[in-house]
Length: 379
Ligand SMILES: [Zn+2]
Image 1 (spheres, helix red, strand yellow):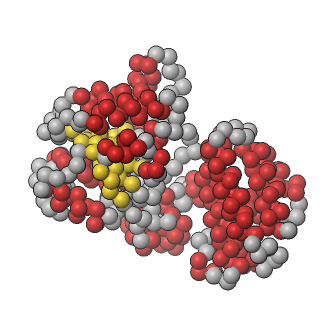
Image 2: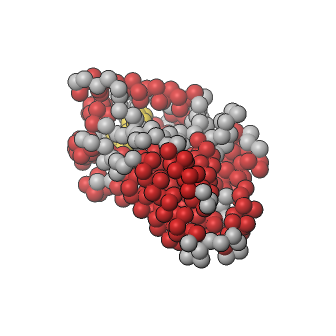
Image 3: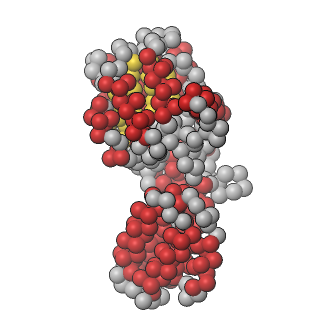
C-alpha cells in the first residue's frame, strides 16, 4: 500500500516547490497547523521532492523510482520519527533505544498496511531521549542512496511533554544547529507554542490551514468509499481535518475512536443537566482512577456540546456542530437553562482541561466538574 494521497494545501505546495527549484528551501522546516490536517503527509511529499529524479516547479514527478519508494514509506533516505509509548522493558539507555527502534518499525509497518487508519490514540506517548539519540546517530551518517536525506519528526511538541524531555530537545538541538549538507529536517506540530524557543528559532515555519469541509468529505467518499452522508457529517465534525475525520468513521461494526468520545461527552453533558445527582457520580466513577491526560479530548468534546447548546439557545441551529442532536439541543435549550450558563460552563471545562494536563484523579475531576456544571447551568 502507499500513503494516502496528499489532499489540498496547494498554496504551500507551490511555495515549497518553487523554493526547492531555486535552491532556497530551508534545511530545517516546521510545518504547523490543526491536528490531522496532513502535516506528516505533506512532509513526505517534500521528501519526495527532495529525492525525485525529475522534479518540476509543480513538485515531485510521482512516477520515478524514488517517488514511488517514498509513497510506499520504503525510501531508505526518508526517516520518519513519531511519538511512541515508553517501552515496557527499559534497562540500559542502549536497550531502551533499541526497544524504541523496534516500536518505530512496527508503527511504520502499520502505516504501510493501513494507510487510512485513524491514528488517534489515548495512549501517552513522547519523543523520548532514546528516539532522538537514534535519530542523531543516523543524521551523522551520509544518505544511503542519493545525495539527500530527510528526517521527519512528527508532533515535535512532544519533545517537551515527557520527563527527561529537556534532554531530548537539547540532543535534537545540536543536530539542527548544523545540519550536514544534504540532510534535511521537517518538524510537524499542531501546538508550535509548546516547542522550546531554541528549537523553534532553528526552523522556518510553514502553516498548513484547515481544509474546506467539502474537500474532506470528497476525500472520504473517493478513497474510503464512505457513505456520502456519513462522510459529510465526519467532515463537519473534523473541523477541516482529514486525519480527525477518519476518527469519526465507523471502524467495522464499532464507532470510530473520536465518535465514541463525542458520544461519551454527550452523556456527561446530559448527566450534568439531569436532576438526579446519582447519575453524575455513576458517570464519573465509570472512568479509571488514573491517566487524566486521556481526558483532554473528552473535555474538548464537552466544550463542543456546550457551544452547541449556546447556539441552540439563541436559535442559531445552523451553527450547531453536532447536527445529529439538533432536536435534543433545541428542546434542552428551551427547558430552563440559565442564560449565562453555557458561557460560564465553558470556563469551568477549560479549568478542568488545565487540571487534566497535570496528574489528577479523573474520577474526582469529573465528579467535581459535573456537579459544578449542574449548578452553573440549572441554577
Ligand atoms: Zn519523481
